[in-house]
Image 1 (cartoon, rainbow, N blue to C red):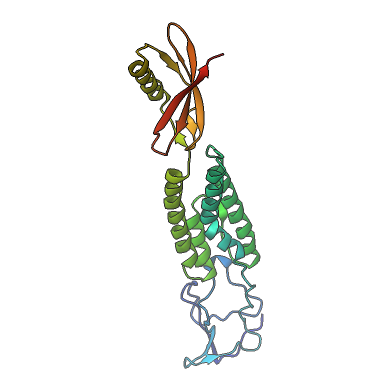
Image 2 (image 1 turned 90 degrees about the horizontal axis):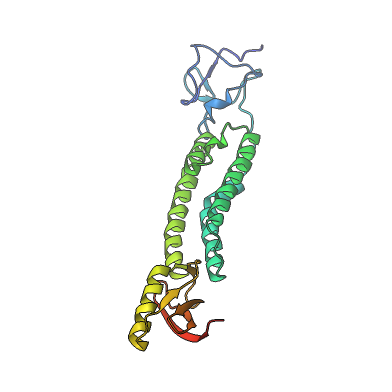
Length: 249
């Protein structure tokens, strides 16, 4: 292996192992990818006196790093906001996803992490998507190995907080209401007794999830007849109104 001239001294980056005194890498030497990138603008060769020098003839020169594609990583960062938007659309369309939207969000985020891992490895950086279930850790590991700032992991945590807070607000303002059917039956029965002086039993549907302004029918039965009572959910607090609509068939 050809060694550089004696006037050159190899200057190892601070995050790489310290080589033996006087050791100089030849042109075919390759640093271990696990060491990570050298600090930006690092000078690998200096004069014995300390002045920076270009790589000497026959000496190792840092190869140009492949361009790291950050587009998928930024998709990971904004994924919580996209999930929040999808949740809002489902609420407005009165679609009860029953948690499937959250499952889909997790699967998509995991897929994006695996995709991004391939891009990072293609750029010659060691990173593992094994931490994909803890996205901030994956993004932190990625930023450290790529020599980038912690903007992405911090931004992801911020968008996640916004998504969780926004999800609570959406659920309380646009989401469905879980009705206490036993309470509905009891209140209607008591009000029928007060208004008509009859002792009626009330039976409501098993399904208890409704959006404000939706209706469902209950059946009120006393000793003489059965009638249909239409219940209207008024708001997200579970307040409701009711009125008889006709005899039960």
